View 1 (cartoon, rainbow, N blue to C red):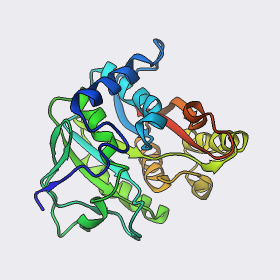
View 2: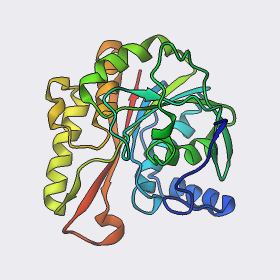
View 3: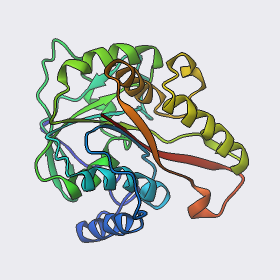
Length: 258
């Protein structure tokens, strides 16, 4: 399979290229003027729900990247698999990923050194929804897509990624926060998760209430080893969009930087 086709265009985000660009631009315009903009961004945690729900929170991370003027050439995308049970971290062997905004090249990997599971990526939205944001602010980049569900493999993934990091590489961990709790409960759970992330409490990994906990933990291991700073950029829940308080999903954007 040479190209992975967009699986959730028209569902999670607009399928029409013009509408998609306008939607993302509106999200950028909604960001606060005093948004924190570090100069040397190393990694981001970004939500991955439908844009109507998590788009403004995701845009905070991408606005920080855009205004930092950092133009990474290599994007390591880490997310959870929602459709396939995977015990290890896996990557994709296709040559390009397609969205309504065009095709993105995939970094070539040594298939003797990585586990490849192309089928798991076909329906998966967690990484795909990041691409239109990236295509809106970067002119030339390639991705290394990785799916991981097992938090016990996070340290190993961090070690695998470490040799790939340079001044032209950015890591993005795709994750929503708590799911389907009453609003007040969700905010308390998410506050605990935020504290664990910001304080790099890797020993409390089991208390990270997030669908992409393994990817988040991977970043936390790297941040500990490489002495990255970190900051919460934006937080909201689905209540902000839907007005429904009884079952909400939490969303947070974080930046890791030097």
